[in-house]
Amino acid sequence: MTGKRVLITGATNGIGVQAALELMNMGAEVVIVGRDPIKTRKVSMDLKILSGSSKIDMLVADLSSIDEIRRIADEFRSKYDRLDVLLNNAGAVFSQFQTSVDGYEMTFALNHLSYYLLTNLLLDILMRTAEEQGEARIINVSSSAHRNATLRLDNLRDESGYSVMNSYGASKLMNVQFTYALARRLEDRAVTVNALHPGLVSTGFGHNTGRLWSGIIKLAQRLFGISPQKGAETLVYLASSAEVAGISGKYWHEKQQKQSSDNSYDHEQQKRLWEYSARATGVG
Image 1: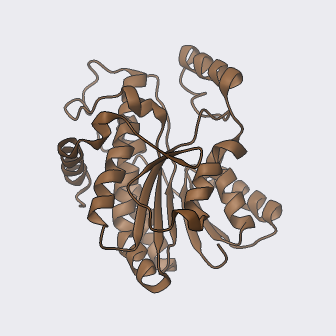
Image 2: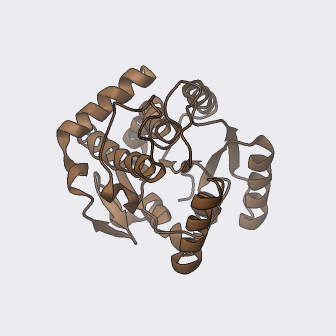
Image 3: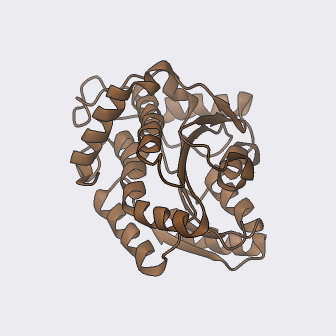
């Protein structure tokens, strides 16, 4: 990874920061994205110390906001003309219905629209890097929660019928469907795009969802959770391994290709999701 540049969203804790550390240890130049400026600055300083590398930069944004995503894409473009790996990792689960500043249900806005918009805004840099360096990679962190989800695009501004797990699962299904749709669009390019399930990782994820859901998530993590180091393995593998060069449009778990849910392969659903996302963001 020496000389390669990696942009990681949701990189201030859990598998995001672990992936950043391991890729820096491999020689990569890493740009992390976080929401809180103080925490993001502290994490970047910690990563410098732990890795012994000064090749780290930071961007600060609320990735549930379309304007904020556009801003950091512009900031990245103003500094850099190379991007070897885009790792879309930011995400959250919300126990109650909330809307983003743009009026969309928050899980959809953060977990899917941020992937869709940031990727499309940086796609020309990724393609140029692939032409000059031989390849570039896009990695979308999904979840096995997508397997029991259905895609609904008619209630993303409507509180009625909101369910925390349905909304989270649907957003993770969108990650997989977006991956497959984008992979087809990039078939004639040296840019690959893959999705993955990192496993149930023992981090702070989901601990701010209210007493009931945070209690359930903490219990599940305590009983069945894996370490951030283990959870980051597939992210790092997809970002760095020569074994996956040229492989695109796949769903991964534990560094192995897996079948995703049946409806994740539905081209018509993927098309509707893409069209909705394009209308919501004005890009695509």
